[in-house]
Image (cartoon, rainbow, N blue to C red; front, side):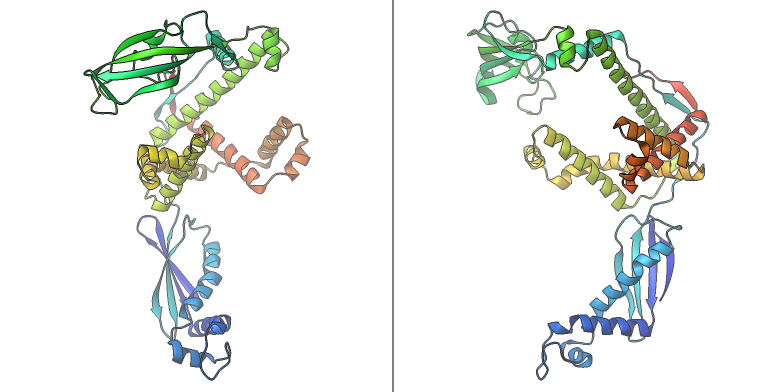
Length: 434
């Protein structure tokens, strides 16, 4: 067997594999031995007919497909192993037979591979750097949100509806004096301030009392999804049936202990620490995204479709998980949108291309700048993880999957790369987003 590798279009390698007459004959004989029991010929017991008899009876190429599969299975993986330093395969090959005779057979595998990336510049660029900080007001707001989340629901009978209440209402909506489809409901639960209804509706319910009926005048937004209602004035006849408020716990020692701290001061410190950790992560992520956005402006690559499709699939899976956590099935969500899975997946195409290109840029720069992770650095990360779960580093490492160590090594390299890029570019303080 001999093979040749040649570059083809759009980051594809053409692998031409030629087998000798002896190799081809041997593969056919083995295919015959494997499959002869499937065939019956008059005058022979099942599975006992000679190869040449079966070929006369069923056709000369009876065992060609199985013989080709045997040769492909035995040699394709070995070829990729020999060429691993020259290219990396990212998908299944497209196979064809270029030549087939008694003397030889030639297989051609068109294989998608990781593309080369051309980066014209990645140093000396002006790049935005993001820095998020945590204020006392941020801490107070977070504690207030937590208190509201753990608040007990209580039925309210002695006051009017207010923001954050859940009100149970009946309503009938009219446009031009006529009821419209989807504009009426009975016993509907609405959280005031959730902005679930069109602007102005929830604000008008605030202040209503139990049993009160009120006409609420609003106007549908110009960009409302129902074209026949967009921009039109409407009136809703609303009756308030029930008010459910929240009994928000006081910020005291009992609440702090409920949240796992010994005192209000300790709980406040814990909240600040968490917010500061999140702010640091956000600062790092947005700065790194900013760096990649600038470098990618000067980068090109012929990305194989299979890499983009794989990233789209990953994004769809994350979307499906997020919906699942909200108690929504992906199929139900797609049915509501009246769109197929493949049609919806196309929404991720541009982001998938961007993500794959960024990954390729990172890998290329790590290689070009010879960025490595030492055993000491890996060991330190392992020890850090072990400490977080209360284990000794040596024992913890014995339980780790090899892929975990590969991830740690990769993470160290990526961190060092972005440190290098920040040091070699003009990082300009950017206005942090809210």
